[in-house]
Length: 334
Image (cartoon, rainbow, N blue to C red):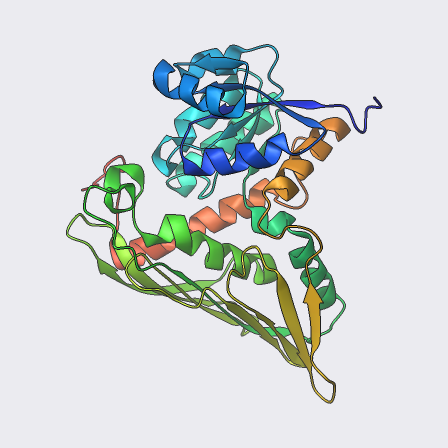
């Protein structure tokens, strides 16, 4: 097997739903091998290992981080544990793919990036939208001037639930609320097109526990471009996105973050539809990018750059500041 196609050995840290979905995709990739899983309890890790045929199961994170046969660790814990879990693995010299939102806040994200860069270890946020081939095609069209200069971005992500008070999405200690779980997608989508905004305005409805249940965001750039974004854990929304420019617009249907298709509208032309090849809802695209980077000796992905992840976290912090959401682990938290 050549260096460009050699197998990459994965460890999975956490055993929840997203960990299961990503693991299932990894197991379908011929150049990926899932060799270990870790949870806070050995019983949970063993059940997950048995389910997916993983050879080693650990009841603590440190054992996974120390496993010499693991090349990269996928961190799938709740947001509140990303800093600790990813940091432990990075300190042990393990490459890390860390779920979104990257961390609870920008300060934690800066700490992780600092560790990775100081040690020369690979780190990437698991923002699968950025690695999606159809999204990359869309970005190429925009860069080629297909819609002119981007003027507005509109995107939303809302689920009705209902989520009971004991659910993790309602738990401030776990980074609950709509913003970090769902709002990270519209915010990251706007960043992908326009970069870090110069102005942030936001309004939210808060739960009795103090997390945001519905949040509306207006971002502004010195160029005059703007983004109107929303997220909710108490109302179904279309989960669509529209990017309008000086010479046209692009419309994404439901599930814009992993699209099956998008439509390009240009003045004086018939609408053009672009469709995905393969599985648009596959996590394999981000895994393939991680493995490409590791084989190439790269410590950051050009598709999901760490400076971009830091910028998104700063915007999420600014939104929380505007709506009055703080987490217990933060100074002055609830």
